Image (cartoon, rainbow, N blue to C red):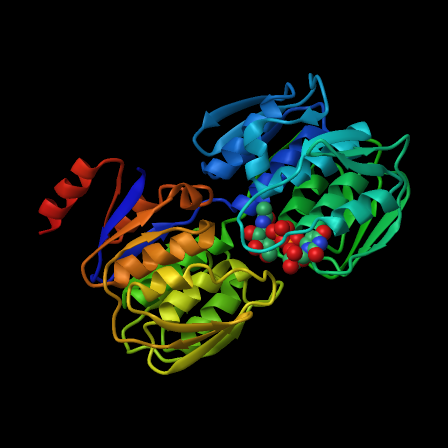
Length: 430
Ligand code: UD1
């Protein structure tokens, strides 16, 4: 029984330091095995997904040393195989980056099919199409994706859907393929740019990351580097909405405000004040919040990974709001839980119609996935009374010290593992 127990109702106030971007880190870890030289990665978040990725890399002989909590030193010179079957790796979506990285460097990869959050069907056809266009043979057998090639060759690839994973994976696989690879309709997310910058710091020749056409000129080899991962857009956004939902005043520090623009814009629209500085954004929710419409879109649109957090906040905002999910089809599973806290939300296919209520009330709820889990914690922080959130292992996949960071902002939240601790918490908060 690992749970968060929350006594809600007080506004969050203060400053919070945002860590490195999980989704950039996962791809950068995979990319780090593409050189025989040592790579040092700073601002590495210490969360379950990155730790699982590291463990999978170690299972094929990659040396990984944590020089401090957020710095890893990686050397992949003595890799002893290209088969990654580690049981844990199936649970994380980003295991697919090991296919691109191993295929790109060794022309051979066998990796267990990716899992990740259950937020709808998550095909990887575009990744495989990219590998095939580069000259690889790809098959699926015994739960493994097997990709191999005599040699890879630069190619022109048009992605049918804008996919972060496919864009990065094709970059990885093509970075050492002779000739030029052009990836059209590529994703523009900040972490796509971060992975390209990381690869370029290893000697790659990638241009156009951050636009919808990326050009990769194959280089013969990659070298060691030292690199710091960008701040996590979604962790920052989650704390920004925590400020809004609890009517608080929170400054997220160590962020790139440009990456948060779609989030800041929505917060302003519903009545929050936003103050930006070079590497911080302050969210003040002093006035009653109003309603809005929002549709998730690829970057620079509003991120699907922020959809549950905005919905939880709009559930407490006056009027009727409409949230449309256009990236994943099954991303409203948290609505049932939120309804048990008093929310008034109706879901019709990929749209949630939200009638704001004055308050939520505490309840025992379960995190259905990573981001929805975090959003339900926000609901608990805003709610009257006690909320327990079960299955927090999902939340811990992507948020480092979530409860501790919230406590620093004045939240009454504890991570508990027994009924006794629950009773103790209840006695403490009265
Ligand atoms: C990544 C993020 C995830 C985020 C998502 C969208 C990681 C580890 N995960 O997931 O947190 O929610 O981006 O910003 O970085 N699609 C296909 N075929 C493919 C690939 C994708 O049809 O081969 C579809 C997906 O089903 C989805 C859309 O394209 O509808 C976008 O998916 P994609 O950007 O690939 O998401 P992920 O990389 O899986």
